[in-house]
Image 1 (cartoon, rainbow, N blue to C red):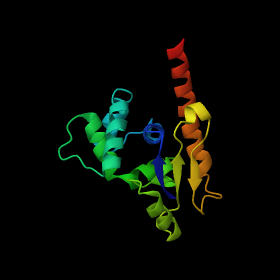
Image 2 (image 1 turned 90 degrees about the vertical axis):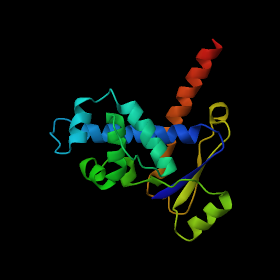
Image 3 (image 1 turned 90 degrees about the horizontal axis):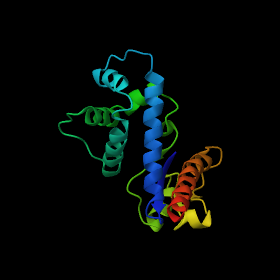
Image 4 (image 1 turned 120 degrees about the vertical axis):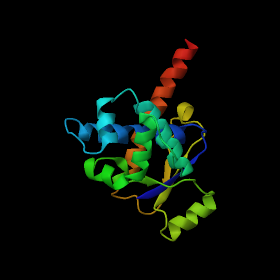
Amino acid sequence: MRYAVIDRSGWLGDAARRDIIATDVATLLDALAGTAPADPVLAESLAARGTFEARAVDLIHTLSVESGRLRAPVTLHERFAAWWMEHPDTVRAAAPEVSFTRFVEVYPARPLGRLARLVADGSLDGYFIVPDDSVATGEAPRFVGSRAAGSGIEAWYGEVTEALVARQRVLEANEGA
């Protein structure tokens, strides 16, 4: 399913995107654990797991949103991020549980009227509207689209955002204490 996100909160959509990428990277590395990948970037990434992941996730996020490429990756996190962007089929084959085997976010999200037309013509399966303040209201992102039934996209994205909202509530409660 191809989906977009209209983020009215200013943070939750981006945080969800980063969390999804981090989970997918961990899923791939978990799937490769105990193997000896032929690809040197993957072999080095497994050996250095944990020391580069956060930086790689940040870079993959940036490259994904900006549809970018690295010209001359040097560090491990740069080489892994470049590899990730260039080998989505290899990622899917090695780790069929990564989210983008089922759900692919389309960037950048268009204005609502344009998104509605993309859903109507089948170019997009739907989009989420992230409310202004889920932390205060408890309101979940709303999916708009006709093909969500049976896909699990609403439950999947809802779980991701619910965990982030809960984490933010704890942070805000601790700040006030």
